[in-house]
Length: 394
Image: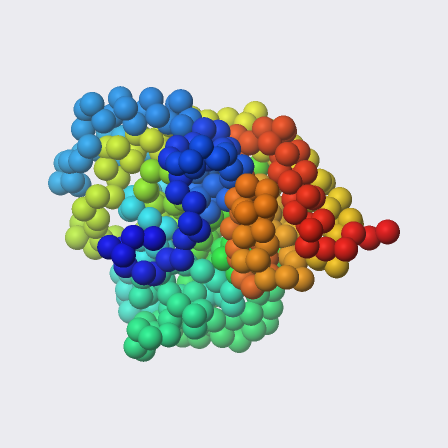
C-alpha cells in the first residue's frame, strides 16, 4: 500500500484494474470471482451497462448543484423510495454512517419538537455496527473501534439481541428510540428473528418510542425483498440505506414517516454533497432494476441455490464449516478457523473474494446479478479450498 495513504486499512496486495459482472480483473490480468461485492456495495456487479449509461448521461449535464437549488434526480429518487415503503420523506447523504447520523438526529429532534427534550437516548444492540463517526461508533458499542478516541459519545444504551425483557428494563424516561439492523453484518451475519422485530415494534408503540432500522447492508434487495424488514411484516419509523443503493457510487439515505420527522425544518440538518445529481442518477438506475418483482424473485431463487450448495459443503467438512446462516444473498460461513484465514485461503488458492465478519464468520455477498454458473463455480472453488484446510467427513 502507498505510504501516502493514512494506514488505517490493511488491504490485500492484489491491485485491480477493472471488473465485469461478478468478476474483477487484476492489473496482471488474473481474474477473481467476487463474492464480497465491495461489502454489498456493488449490488449490480461491475460495469453494469444501465448504471454506466446513467452516469455518462448525467456526467454530461450536471455533477453538483448544492441543496440551495432543487435537484430533479434527488426528488425523483425520494419519490420512488418513499412510494416503495413505509416512509414519506427522504434525506440523502454520502455514506451509511451519515445516513445513521441523520436517523439519530431525527429521533432526538422528534421528541424535542413535541416538548420532550429529555428523551434523547437511543437503545442499540450487542454486535451492532452503525458506522465510524464518533456518534455511530458509540451506537455500535464495539471497543475495538472506540478505544483511543477519548470518551464515547453519550446517548446510547446497549441491550442483548432477542431479549425483549432486557429491552423493556432498559427503556426509561430519557429513551427516544430503538435502533437495530434486521440482519447484523459486521458481527457475523446474524439475522434478527421476525418475532423479536415485532416485539420491538409493539414496545415502541406502547412507550411512544421511534423504531429505527439500519438497512445499510441488508437493504436494497440483498435478501430478495427490496428491504429486509418487509419479509417480517414490521414497519419502522425511520430507516437508513447506503451501500447497494448506489451500486458502487457513494450515496446514503435516511427515510422516515412525516410524523417521525416532525421538527426537521430548514437548517435542522444538511449535507454539501448529499443528493447530488450524479448520485441521484445512478441510484435511480439501480432502482430501475432492483424494484422489479421478477428480479427480486430471481434473487430469492439464486439465494436458495447458493445456500443449498454451501450447506452441502458444511456436511462434507463438518470440522471446518460449522454453520451457514443469513438470508437471501447475505450469507455467513461460520468456521472453526479464523475468518481472515478463510478469506485469505479463498483469495490466494481459488481466486475467490469474500469478506471477514467477526472472528469466525466469512461473509458471502455476491452481486445480485450473479449467474447460476458463477454460483456453482464459487461452490466448486470453496470445495477445493476447504479440502486443503479440512479433513472431509467419511
